[in-house]
Amino acid sequence: MAADVVDLIMQDHREVERLFDELKNHPEKRKGLVPVLTTLLSAHSRAEESAVYPAAAAEAGEADDVAHSQEEHIEADQLLAKLADTDPESADFDKVLQNLVDAVTHHVEEEETKVLPGMRANLSQDRRLELAEAFAASRKEHLGDQPDDITRDQLLQQARNADISGVSSLDKDALQKKLQQEAGE
View 1 (cartoon, rainbow, N blue to C red):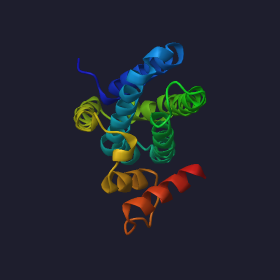
View 2: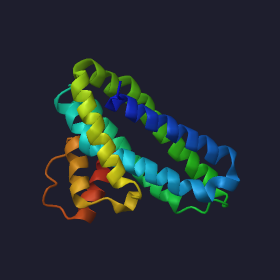
View 3: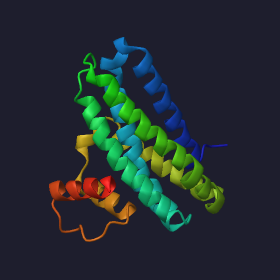
View 4: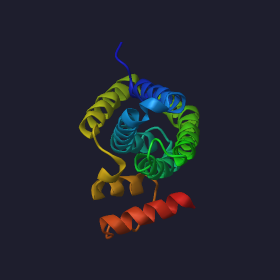
């Protein structure tokens, strides 16, 4: 049987955890692995935000948890950008990496105990398979993206997912600042 969207998301989570272990335990691989991590996490986040979170909120009754998960994505994007800008051989790298690991691990634990079980319980198998196709297509489209490549439309989707209103007239920079501010509260 084909993997449903929950399975695909969890597969990505396991791959991110594997990359975190490699980055922690093999400093000599950091220069090559940081771009792999940033592109995987960026593509994963954009795919969840566009293809999964709207359905989880509207159809699976997970609106509050989706809003919280969206805020955590915004925080992860900031930490990911900081990791990408940190010299892998510097003393700061371990601290920046650990901050990202802590934030993403927390997000994964919450998503896997709240949002994803709600989707399994409240969405049909057929709907989860449809969402898997949409998630995979979106993730493929965004492979190669970095956190700073986010578009204004993607930021507006983040605002909708996080249930932040009154932002449609903001330009990209102001919208991004507003989202970061709301996520930090």
